[in-house]
Length: 111
Image (cartoon, rainbow, N blue to C red; front, side, top):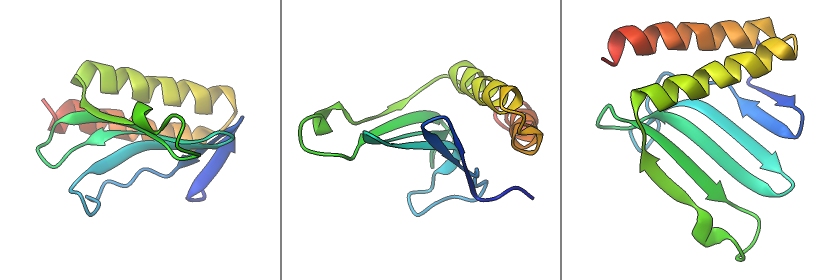
């Protein structure tokens, strides 16, 4: 099993969690940058709808840029495929395989 997080370039990717968090969200992709400090998240919300969330964490200048929005299953699938590509290109097959499994789950459970 790979570690719980990994750096690829300037981004830290956290291991996906198929269990709901305190908001009822299943976080499939979470990537963080520390310069500037910002977080992107993609997953399934408590109503079984795909979502994208962005949080600016560094200072007050761009905090209004933060958002939470629902997206299509197709857009979520494309984001997962993009992450698979990143991990494959960076020779991280264990991480890529985790996201291949998530794609399988997404295609069977979230119709």
